[in-house]
Image (cartoon, rainbow, N blue to C red; front, side):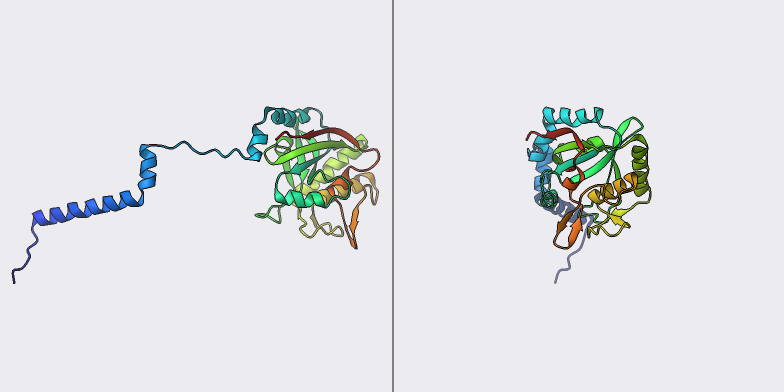
Amino acid sequence: MEQYTTTPHNRKLHAVLLITLLLLFLFVYNRVALLNLIHPQEPVIVNSPNLMRSNNPWNQYHADSCASIVMDGDLVVRSGADAISALFIKANSHDKSYSHAGIVFIENGYPMVYDAIATAENPHAEVSRDSLKNFINPFNNTGYAVYRYQLNKPEIRKFHEVMMGYYRDRIKFDAHFDLETDSLLYCSEIVYKALNKVTNQNKYLNTTKAGAFEYVAIDDLYLKKGIKMICKIIYKQ
């Protein structure tokens, strides 16, 4: 039998064929990406409700306008646009408008909000300090309101100290909504307990009961005589 002899010419031919097959395989496997490089496609923009609210000039103006009228110690409540917010709204007994709350203090000339909120990705989040603009942004929220408590200047200063203390101590979110403990706190509970300390009262605000379970609903924070609404904005869709 005649033995096949590999020559430099044959080796070169094999190499060319192998490279050709590899290039053909790569083209077939990545044809969509390659065609997009040759003929780029315009990205598809999904005009979601969140994006529509965020891009609405009326919403942008009214989200920013609140910053000029808020004062130290003001309560800011918002209505989130997500499913979890919808569940928290249902926990309100009377006014089912808002799902989250925070307290504003002017720091370095700009309103900042102290609050406690958790997410599915971070269920044990710590007390946060965020800008008012981000807190009430129309992309994630459908509206907000600002309320003012009847507090004197020393009480407002103490209010700030208490909220900064929660933030500094990195108090974590209370996923069990246990009003009896102070080591973990949820958003409305922070406001409730801080105001008790500030006013030297055991129950400055009302609470809500569901059977034997007692908690602080969002509407408990402002549905009390003497608490003044400063502004209320419902974003346009």
